[in-house]
Length: 607
Ligand code: G6P
Image 1 (spheres, protein in one colour):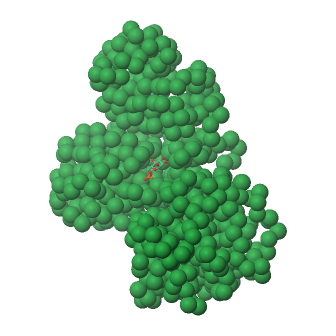
Image 2 (cartoon, helix red, strand yellow):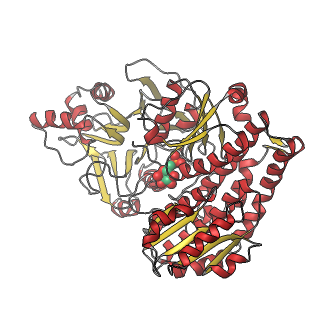
């Protein structure tokens, strides 16, 4: 987790560092710090809290031309100034920032302690800087190289030594690191977002690689000293796409972007005349996809909920077994996989450590591995045999919204594509394609009801618990609704299959328990109506998401949010949107930090 930025060149480093850290706050925001190297030597400034706290302590007038910074998501040690990065050597001549986890830090720390090193922090990272100091004999890159040979774990690091003021040394294993190229200046960032507007071409470091970065050149080599020739690639993102615009929060902006992002997910991919779709990214593996006898979808968090919806849709359209696995469980349980199996990894960031590791495990066992992700060129995209991008643009709000609905669109596209290779008929394919085309307008219609959803949210905001229910395709939507609420409002919320409620959660229901039921008209509708009756009989407050033609639920529910009707496959997308808005308005009403909820991070690059 954590974000890293670095600069070396003719300009003062501070403006880029502070702006870059701000943009990387989605990776963690419990403390931050910078190291600056100039005529007064190496200086470190840190602050607990967000980058804005740090910015108050670092004068914008500082003139150092070399510097780097870090925004932290605590793993080892509480958020405090001592635990914030950069960490420094005992003599203060070396400073280092680190993203990742050093797994064998405990014995190394003990060894250093016995040598007399006094540790200033509780972090795993601090051993790195002391080891580099121990191995420093006038060549920083060499000292870093020797140190990395001693550690196990994941890292992206950036280091500087007071005696080598013309260079930054960086290295990568498991955590992302990009080098941005400029005119007589160079940049370091753990994420391309920090580089937008500063550098148009980047070198992507691979695992096991290091680089020495000077203002005028960059040399890349492996940790075992083999030189690396790496082409720079274009940085594509545009600055305005990571701006809130007129919205008070990124999350709200991203919710309202969905008519466009959903359209972008299928743009150029629909073939109505053929009743099918075109997915260029998987064209090279069509034969294997055709032969595939089993699908496993793997992901974490909201992407895992998208996978659960995908399971219903893919199984229905393909008639082959489809399973969904938490990536963190999948990778450690020796899953049964063979060459007839296709594993689909789903990830907004394309960086989630567990998802990446699950893919590697699936590949090792011979499965075809597809990636569905948003970040172009991300680690997961690169690890896939083939894949489909979401094209949703940068998602900044920590709680995923537009990426979720785009994931659902792409899963539908995949289902139609694979279905048409098998038994899916033209008419069925055509119907789904036409339904996808109608989605953006239907989403607009729901967004237009935001004031009504806000009114309901204000009534729910005072509660400390909530239960979300749904059946079939809407069970995972209920899970996602509950996750959204707990993530950003800190209200305890649970998602349950509506029929399972009577096997436990019903004990919780009384007049203080709001129950949000996702009940668009489908084959399970009548059953869900009975489940709602059960809640009402126990005086639970019922908020229903229903399709427009519904009359029965209008009478039964305390509150009802109506969505347009659509075919089964696209209804989960429509049903998810009011739940996003509901959580958003509840969290705002409770005064929560919607875009950066406590303890969370946007990209989880630790296991
Ligand atoms: C974090 C984020 C979630 C996200 C999950 C998986 O926990 O806070 O919003 O769903 O990671 O991330 P991914 O980028 O793999 O979809």
